[in-house]
Image (cartoon, rainbow, N blue to C red):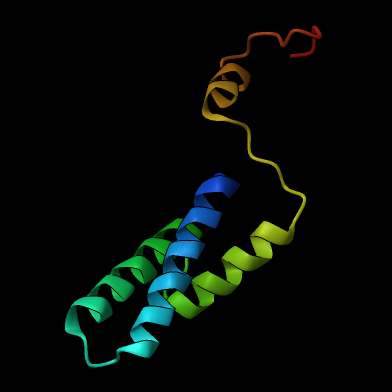
Amino acid sequence: MLLPAKTEVARQLRHYRAWERSMLASPADVAIRATFEDSGYTLCVLMGKRCAREAADAAERYLRTNLVTPAPEQADRFSSGRKTPSGAA
């Protein structure tokens, strides 16, 4: 399974939490609620969950792990079979 970049997960989680606070402060504001729901949907897609609350929980757990995702340029290098500078494949 491919893992999303932690920087992107952190950014989307911050975005979701900020809109959550705004929505809780102004629950009748339709524009804020729509943007909050959009940010929840984005987090769901990123984390592979159906519920925004589950996606936020999964994002927080993922950010606490030691799993490291390579930068895009490193991912290309590792998948192409070329050798790394240390000589390992």
